Amino acid sequence: MLDIGQLQQSFRVRLERGGDIHEVPFSAVFSGPVQVADGVFEWALRSEMETLEPMEVLWEVPCIDLQALWFPAAGRRRSLDLNGSQGFTARLTSHAPVVCMHRADGQNRLTFAWSDATLPVTLCAEVHEETASVQCVLKLFSTDVQNGVSGKPSMLRLDVRSVFYAEAIADVASWWRVHATRPPLSVPASARLPVYSTWYSFHQPLTDSEVERQCELAKDMGFQVVIVDDGWQTSNAERGYAYCGDWDVCLEKIPDMRAHVDRIHQMGLKYVLWFAVPFVGKQSKVWARFQDKLLGVREELGAGVLDVRYPDVREYLLETYLHAVTEFGLDGLKLDFVDTFSSQRVRSIQGGVSAHEGVPSLSDDASEPRRAQRDEQSVVLAVEALFAELVDRLGAVRPDLLVEFRQSYVGPGMRAFGNMFRAVDCPEDGMENRVRTLDVRLLAEHTPVHSDMVMWHFDDSEQSVALQFLQVLFAVPQVSVRLDELNSRHEKVVRHCIAFWRQHRTVLLEGQLRPYHPELLYPLVVAKTREEWLCVAYAPMVIQLPDSADGTVSRADRPNPLHERYVFVNGTFQDAMVVEIPENLTGLCGRLTVVDCVGDICLRETVVWNAGLVKLHIPSMGTAELEVDVYEESRD
Image (tube, helix red, strand yellow):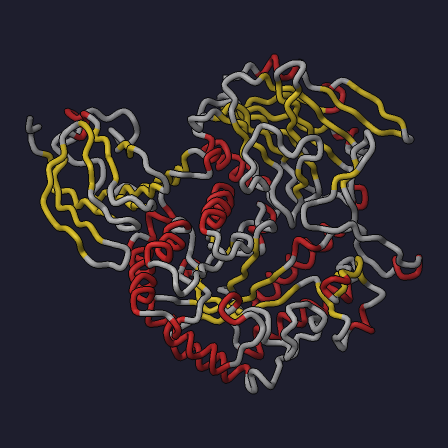
């Protein structure tokens, strides 16, 4: 465990006052530490320092037993150098202010987090060659934080416990929830059920009859929700957003939206409709109304980004969504591109800028009379106000409303407004889908995490199709292919994978989750409940069964197995998995069933496992389930 006293000695603060940089003692700016748990410490920003002056908090961590970093914006970047001195910026609508430094075995070395997940904060970590240490930096109050106060606590949290990294991250998520001003949005049961989406399968050219045909097939395959994506509102199919903003139904495609939604309801599916929240297109009727109330124009998209600091802009959006839900009978909204709302780049007080990932720097060239019409000066706080009123007003008419948000706007603050968090678009890229869904799950607590839509080439092998599903097994699956064009083998894969996921949904979504080796992009993931233990191996390795439920039970102490069911999922292209049985489980007996990737049973037999290595002959992308009966005496 790192010595918190030595860490604190390296703390320092830089302030910008009157254009000059001043370095001041850390203790002059923060009070503490307060030890809130063994190995967990908090420092609070002193009230007299809440002047919103640009500030940098710096400290150094020696590179001792420190091999990798985890942070919400990592993607496939897991090195000790977190994008150098630029780092990443977290705000309400993008990521979350937390970084976890860990050993290669997953043990936490240092997890640091900032309490206010609403206003922008930049987190940096960079290897300092001269001292063989990682220099950590928090950049505070350097963007439109200066235009408003969120009302949330300003605290720095450091966790140096020697615990599994995922536990340290989960505790930060719980900490944010405790300090939040609004609780997480309630989660309807349908938010945890498989989804069919029209985006990759249709893109913009869709019709009501085509969507209904897919929904008939989807329902029969086990799906419970349909998301109708971009295209319902325009006859244009150029993939831009020039026609967004009016949100009138394109009658050429869907002559009667309410009747269309009713027909899908009669099939037994929930209906979710897509909206691009920030965009008002140059070809829309409302462009003339709002062209002077924009954060900026995205010429490559043919659309402007609405400035929600104007109350009439927010009211227009709210009335649009309220009308759609009530008039069309919708069950939910897919609210897209929320992370496009931004007003400035993040500026270092040492000079230079670092743009928030994926968000352009948008200028504020409104006239003074126009600015006077705003009721909020901070873009982030205006977005928060928009969604707070949205869930309040829509919740009054549809308390079970589904609201989907897409990575990166799936941070702790957005849990109050959304109940379906989806991985960022990564079509055909199963590994990226796995990494993204697991990254989001580590911070989402009980908010359901969804995969990006699974898709594949129709000439691909059934093993490759199955792998797309296995990569996202620990998330709610979304699928977007033309189901009526599947060949018989691919259809069997889809039916089997959805059925398997639904059968094990409790352990997959609600079980204790342990994604191992994030620095290797999670090659092994385990989830367990009291009844079931399930693992997925995405690379050849020896799977070690746990020797006790909590690390304390001896064989003599327990007359019953630790779990009633053990499930092994082979996410590799080899036809076997190797399992190590601990001494504590020797004599484990039960009925073993092996199934291939299309659901055909390959083997069913009674087995007795003794301590040592057991080779399970599981087909590529297949599964093996052991239903435990009793323990037998060890057989030599």
